[in-house]
Image (tube, rainbow, N blue to C red; front, top):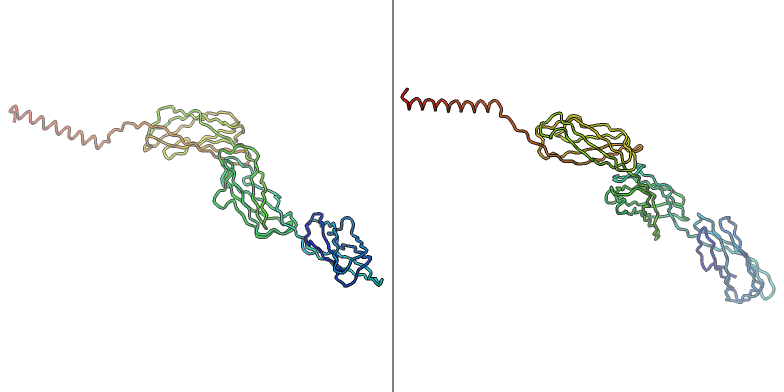
Length: 362
């Protein structure tokens, strides 16, 4: 009596239905056939009945049996069951033998996210080149080969910092093995605060599935210049001009250690003022005494830079402004005045001599 499996592949962490065929390959009948299946390893268990009996098995006849087998997780490769076969021939002689039934456990790799770390840790709208470190673990039952990862962009939220920053490749991942991969993303300036999930496309060994990275976007302080006044009409070369700014935090978060600075090659003086903490929807008035360079253009563009802290993060916001400068009247220098006076005196002398000649004095 020959024993062989009709389906040799088993799945780990699963109850498998194994179809086994017993065939009489001899030239005589086999009577009172008894077959018992046993497993001598703890990771392979027979569930339910493992003993089968049949009164007669003719020459060339096949007998199919269904065996329920459970394979524990994390098992792959070759395994075996043992079949103890006993029967009688037509003359009453008894026969007994033990046969090994070879099987194969075919698992598959499966990746799971163990941890996600962002740097900077507190992500806010407008962040550039944010490091996204993902720790992936193969929680499947078999090695994962040639793993391709693609971090999908979310319009209006995140996008790759540059071409290729959203892709990663892992050649080989054993079972239970963790791997670190890093992506670089930019967070949109218009991103709304809240909790999001970024899809991570995973492909390996003919499998395609999607994991999701958690992302929390925190609210960032937003400033608005509601008033800008000057004590006198600004002009090129003007000194001691008092500039009054009213700045308002139009967000709902507190900006700590706020500093306002003017950035321009044509503005000097007190160009930076420490404001302190500015709560949400709070306004503050600052006064700077500045002077304008004599070579400043009539349409002067400058930047108002606001720097502050939110928790441990140092943030900066820049606003571009433009003012019109009055060009003051310029007095001629002493050399030009001397030349003009000299020509005037010479003209007067010539006129005087001409008058005298006409009257006959010379």
